[in-house]
Image (cartoon, rainbow, N blue to C red):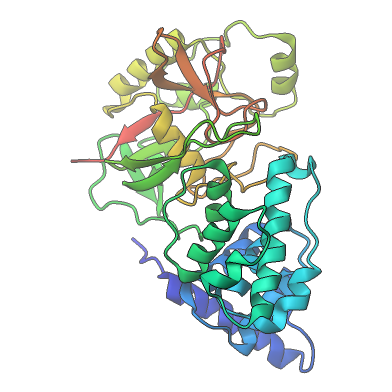
Length: 391
């Protein structure tokens, strides 16, 4: 298997590309937007904040360009990273950085107040000549929580987030790790082709979620922090299908696919717009299909539990949606940090988790696209299968 680059090696490659761009265009700013889409630009800024303690001329150039980026997450991450690196020359650029408005990207009034306060505090701190707690205490008394959180962030000793707003701050500065290396010993029913895992004997691609610590919860839409963020350990790595299963996937494995169960008109409309729509089944039929796949593949196939599926959709940075921290137009092709697809479109996905009164919980779908949003109100949903790691 291919050895994965470390974060330091990845950053070195980015730095080389930026240096080459400057040499090719003397006297001109580097073309930061040309480094890739918004997802990559966010990660470049966050890895800079994670790996460096002070700004270099090249980093200042990147951050100055990032503060004027077309993507709001890139801009806000650059504000935080510039403050962390004591980039005092960027104070005026931070003060002028554009922020989203209420309702844009699904951000509510509390979110915008937080981002506005963050920008004010960052500009104030960089102009104060010191990053001491006393300087924070003299700024924006209406945001004592934000003062504390930003101070801890600058000192790099921020506690694990416990509220929705703390989780947003964490997600905007924490880089997503590079893809986890696949385990050497694969479970029955899984093989690897070109460094990508599949269900053996099929074209059903899997994603790998390594064991480790994840941040779950906190995605409440009512504008309150009533649902605390949970620090959760995934005790054992797991393979999950990248996309919800389709009829062709199931039949490829030698299992007869049941017809789509009772669909409402809106769901039928969504499926008609797709060239390869997924199966939509009741939870009973989804369980039966998992049992059939387990028999023919020899794999320990099951539905993922709700926490594991949230980990696959969210990654380790605590983001609100699989693709980031703001709502966007859905195509179905948006990917999570683990490369999970079709979490928010066209339909939710069953899990093995039940409510206290026995109803099966589903995650995702266009009405609940946040990673942590869970619902027990669905009659039909799509299914992904999970196969645990060996050991």
